[in-house]
Image (spheres, helix red, strand yellow):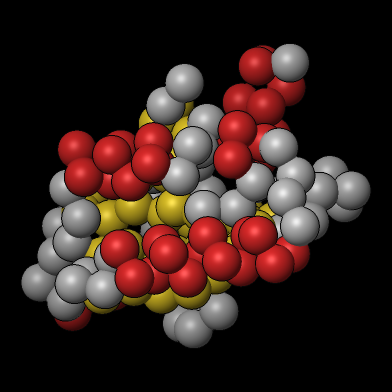
Length: 133
């Protein structure tokens, strides 16, 4: 099961709504690098609060968790998006791209929201999947 989840996370497209941008694990993204540069940032993370430990919650529960994530990260520049898996049976999860967050802080937030993994990166380096379990 863990290997299936890891493969699913690695093949997920992490999409932003605005700007229209797609982040993929292991793929350098020049648009993301430009966004970081324009905001004088070198680090970022892509985190969802949806479906803790891949346990599907109701829309209301997930939306409440997303609002809590937004409140927790209000001191950062954030962009909303969603993770879209190749498996169409899995609903996209509303997420945040958090600009300027350290790896350590991103991990703490991911763990707070009981996520199996988060996406993390630094400018000019390919995005990586950080396993939290």
